[in-house]
Length: 322
Image (cartoon, rainbow, N blue to C red; front, side, top):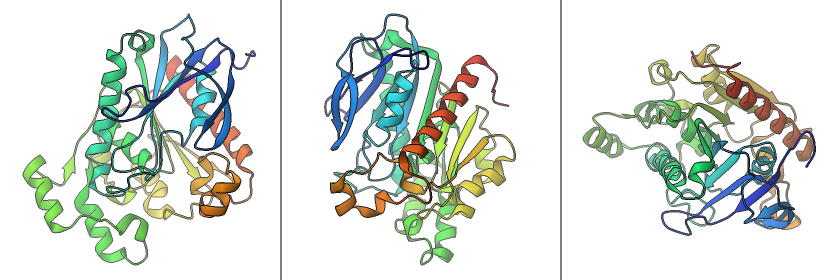
């Protein structure tokens, strides 16, 4: 512990085992940290330690990217835990590294936000963890598809028809977004279930959100973003080799017109926000290891500081929604 990090990072995994989903948490602790490994990447945390005694603490709900896992941003979770935040990361059903059956499909606007809400419900009801949560300081953070997920929680009415219309023209040029674009049958189902192609999953408990290289900007409209009234931070990659900037981060920036803070990280690519690569990952999943002018440690340090400053300003009221 130092002046800059008054706590150690506590860590617990599989808090609810597999029912309804695996979930990991990091949190302020005072017990000594020891070596831990997350998907083969070495780090340090105080596994199963008790909470520091001066809570309750703000909580950050984390939504991982498509086909990812709950440890995708463990480096950021540990950093925030050492500075007084609880970070909770559910592993999304049907859109993770073990089961990608619903990756980049309508689950992005249906199941994913519901899982985030359920995770918060379960944590608040947990006998030990619930009392440690400051219910006035509940935040949400997500990367890529997770960025779209937390925007849903903030009140973004994702327009599935706009997604379909975009992909009717751009399917060959944007396979990442258009591979599973909704069909007419999908749109009809949304009308039957929700009364239209726009689905609201707003959670008024969320006080601010952070979207890192958010996906599915093609489904963003003026009207769909019009009701968001909480502080927002968008973190962009300087070179996003996966998502077309003009219909994702830049499109959000254009529509929000000064209602959110945007920070572009120089030398970063879409996957620069994942953990530092191991030799195994580099050999078998080399595309996850590409950065564009900065080493990954430097990128991570920049992101940590930007996010920490934003959250601290939200906590003190220096940054407010409209």
